[in-house]
Every structure is written in C-alpha cells, then in structure tokens.
Length: 455
Image (cartoon, rainbow, N blue to C red; front, side):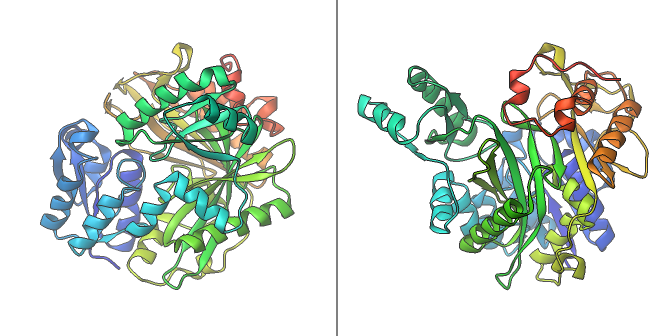
C-alpha cells in the first residue's frame, strides 16, 4: 500500500478519501485553495495541508502545474483526484506518470478516449452496444445538415459537448427552429467550461431512465461489475437523488446492461473504478449507451451500502497493484435498497439560487440505517466559489419502501440554519407517489411545478 497520498480536491469527497487512507494507515496531504486551507474540515483531518492557489478553481483545483509541483515537493506516492475538477483530466494523469507518481484512476490513454464523447460512442458501437442515433454537429448548420438531422435522428434531440460533462454545453431541442440558437449557446458554454466548443447531437428519449453500472478494471484485464444505480431524478441534467439497485430493471435487462458495461470497459482497456452510463426508454425497454465516467461518482455510497464494498479503499488497492478483497472479487449480489439525497445550499423557491453563508446550526441525522457524508460543521462558512453541495444523505433499508421511510425520517431530523437548503424540497419529492411508484424519468422534475416541502 502507498505511504503518502495527495488529495487535490475539497468538500465531502476530500474528507471521504482522507478517512479511507487513515483506515489503511496511509499519510494524507491535502492540496487546498487558500479559502479551504483556512477553514475546511478536510484541512483539519489531513496529515498535512499545502496551499496551491487562490479560492477560484482555475487558481487552485484546476491548476495542473501547481498540483504536480505539490505532489513532487510533498514526496507522495500517489494522487487521488476524487471527482470533479481534474479527476478525468488526461494532463494530470500523464503528468503523474512523468514524475513517477501513481494516478488513482484509469491511465491517460483511457482518459483520452472517454474524454471525447464521440470517440466513446464509436467504441461502444464497435463493442456491439446500442447507441442512440447521433452525429458530430458542425457549427455550420446548413439546410442539408438540418435535413439529415431530421431524417436520420429525428426530434427531440440533445446537443452535448464532446468534452467535459456535468450538464454544461448541453441543450434539449424539440424542433429544427431551435437548433441554431441552441447550438451556439451550447458551444459557447462548452468552450468556456472545457476549452472546446465541439458538439455532437443525438436522439433524446422523452421518457428515459438514467441507469449507471459500476465497473472495476483490474491489472489482469478482468472487468468486475459491482452493481447498478438509477439516477433519473435530475434537474437540468444535474442528479438530485440516486438509488441502488435500479428499481425498474428486470433480470434480463439488468444482465444486458451489465454485459454491455463490461464489454465497453474491456474494449477501453479500463483500469480502476468507473461508471458506464445508459438511458433506458421507459416506453420500449430499449437501452442506449450514454457515456463513461472514468472516476469515482458522487453517488458511489449507494453502491457501497448495498454491496458492502468500500469503493475508495478498492480504488487505492487496485492503483497500487495490490489484491482486492474477496468481497470485491466475488461480486456479491446487492442486498436491500439504498437512496442518496444530495443536500445543497440552494433556495428552491428562487429557482435553486445558490445560498452561500455561515452555518449557524448543523445537526445531521444520526441513525444506524443512515449515512451522512459531509464536510460541514456549525460555524462553517459555505464559500461562493464552488458547487453548493453540503452533504449526501444515504438511507438503507431491507426493501425500497423501508429505505424511503428511513430517508424521510432522516430529512425530518436534519437541522440546518444560516443558509437555504434543498432538504424540504427533497423530502417532498421522496414522499411523492411518483417516486414511490418509480414513475419519475429524467425530465420529470423539470416539467413539474415546485415540489411541496414535505413534513
């Protein structure tokens, strides 16, 4: 196992990695922005903290040169990027290789392939996995191109950035009249976020479920499947509530998705933990490859809850060439059900406006069937520079019904003062008949009026 690991990240995922390293007896060095170095929980827990730049991500967590210089100066054996920021950046992985430090994640060659969504689509097709009709989108939207899109793909369509993710550079288009302005807006947003305005377009399934398959690639070339998740509760392509296992899959469809994920990962030469994502058409049961997330997912705790596998620990074991535990290798079937709610510092009544500020009270729920991953504490100041995630509440139950009941109790018990949060809104959603009957699809939240705050 490694002696010392650098964590160039922040928030709850930095805390999560530090705790996993502690359990393994691994020293931790936190590479933090100036604002996080002063007050974050991760900074309090890490063995050492090194400031890598100012509070804005471009000055710190997105600064490849600063992170590599820090890794070299700190004498670390590995860099665990967490998720977000540079977790899927080929430059960081390649830089780690050049300075003789392990990157806890896939090799740069894999990141290069999956970082280009058009390339990932081609790999999926060559592996025999279904993909939705689509093509690269040229900025010159000629009449001929519009005709081709209408005849070969059909509407509605989804415009996506070729590089990056997180919903940026993404636009839903329902008619040819909207395409030109939507493409221009998507290209501008993608260029600002990822440095590239390249786009592609594919058919959008109107009533779709977003299904993820958790994979683990070993040095031997073996690809293990660690279960699936449903992430259909989304707002503007941002996930809000996730659960494992995916509740609407029958045995046949589940096997097809797992086999397809394994085939894609094998074709990529995938190594370490990652997620292969699909959309499933509610009306027909057809499924299509969506993308590969070559990193740890925000929603990984629901998979941990139903499998008993510590995915972060497993990432470190695979990365250093160690043996994974028998529990991982045996790929146990999932047990029970787990649901995760992402608690954000946002005001739902004001179109989910971010709500930075000081947490006057912070009392997360405490229960044997509830896990709370967070970096917050009473008196912590939520900064305005980063995403608004405060905590992930994960509720487990022997059945999905029990997991829902446990989640509702947890949200009722969660006390936060000083900032607006999404707790009440999420309680209303989890308590709804639509959630109970698994009738929510990826566009459902966007099509609804504001959910009532339950309780």
